[in-house]
Length: 101
Image 1: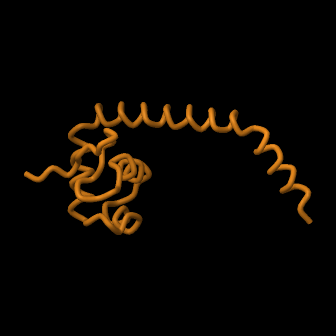
Image 2: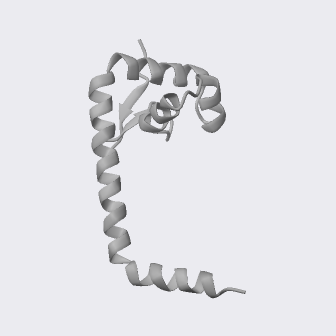
Image 3: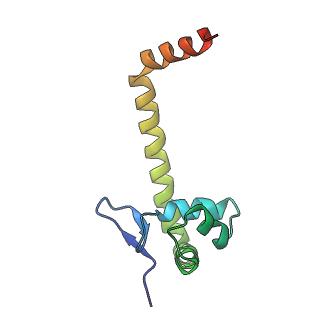
């Protein structure tokens, strides 16, 4: 049986043979997207890869959910750090946006 999910060098779960993360497919699946519409959003995926990724997710739901929650928390933390680090720039941009005719 072919493995539809592999880990890249950074440890991220990816759809085998593509640059699409399993997280991207899972988030689309959570939003109610079908494998066909997932393929439309990610044209580099085949229908087989989309179904395979979803099957992998369903077979490993607990561990994948845990990993995705950890990634989401880290992304939020990094986003907040960037906002704090660039607060002055963000303020100047907001002021410039309001002052625009």
